[in-house]
Length: 162
Ligand code: GDP
Ligand code: MG
Image (cartoon, rainbow, N blue to C red; front, side):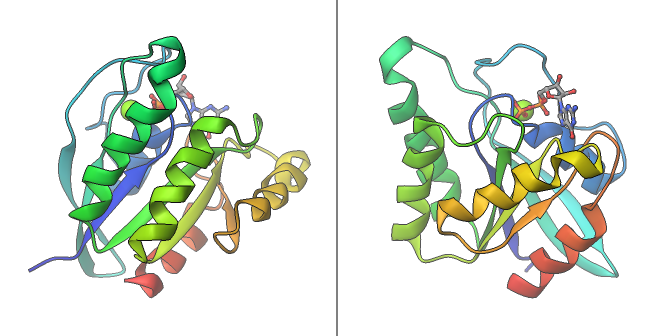
């Protein structure tokens, strides 16, 4: 059976855009507005001839202070059924409490984690991506899901982790 990769992170960081980038088609729904509740959706993917299943964890209903808890809950579900996790953060925003909530779940899971520091659309944003080392989850991979920048290196790292 194919290994399963869960794509997790708070709303609007670009998870669905990254999923589409990896699939090389527009399958996952990209939203400008954060907080749209959706189920987890699985897609068949491959990279360099290796097949795997990508799970887009969608959005979460945003209700002020319950947000971090909901994200952690959703992430926990996705992570528990995955072989590896692609943790997406928005390098242009940095880490927020909601990211921290997911980091706790990731640490406890002991699953391999690859960090995608997304929205690094140009060279200038590389430094912001490097700041994501502070998550304590290893090397952050700078990527622009929108333009494709860095996605090859990210996928190489992901498959190495599987
Ligand atoms: P999700 O909620 O994490 O699935 O995020 P989406 O994939 O729906 O994207 C949220 C917003 O961020 C959309 O407006 C995307 O176009 C935008 N976005 C996603 N990736 C990038 C990126 O690499 N660069 C920039 N500038 N915007 C991005
Ligand atoms: Mg999404």
